Amino acid sequence: MENDIEHRLKKLQDLIDIQASDGNWNYDNYMHGLLNGMYLARSVFDDNYPGFKDPPNLFIKDKEILDKINNGGISYEKNSTSDSNEI
Image (cartoon, rainbow, N blue to C red; front, side, top):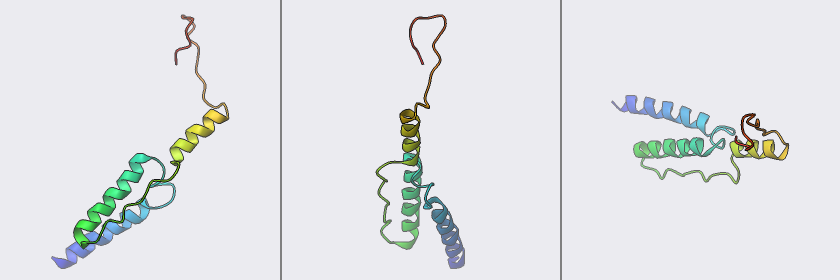
């Protein structure tokens, strides 16, 4: 039984290592929360404080959106049947 738990903890740690990589955990709020949830799951098994990761100042996804806005990369088509500029 102990060996099975150790094996599962090793698998969980492997997943945490992937999720904690740059570009993964800091892509958006969801991915950040996923990493902290994995830390919490590990703490249930090893009885250590989860050591939650603080969010970055700016998520990668938000930076990508800001770059598009600042570079004029976001556009919309004007509705040809209306005078309004609906997106």
